[in-house]
Length: 63
Image (cartoon, rainbow, N blue to C red; front, side, top):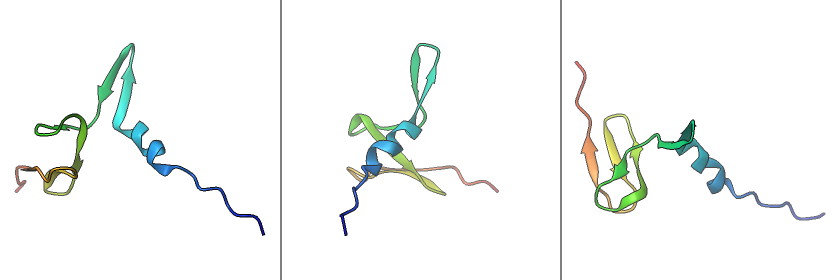
């Protein structure tokens, strides 16, 4: 039985982080202030977190 080809799923996810408006590229997520541009903060329920350096911003709580 032949082996299955592995798909590179990382590159498919990158397109969800950007949006094209006219001639401009818009980043949909906030970037990490420590790591610089190109490293996005992950969106969680109550915080934004950098997976590279561990920087965390807590979102204001809604009551």
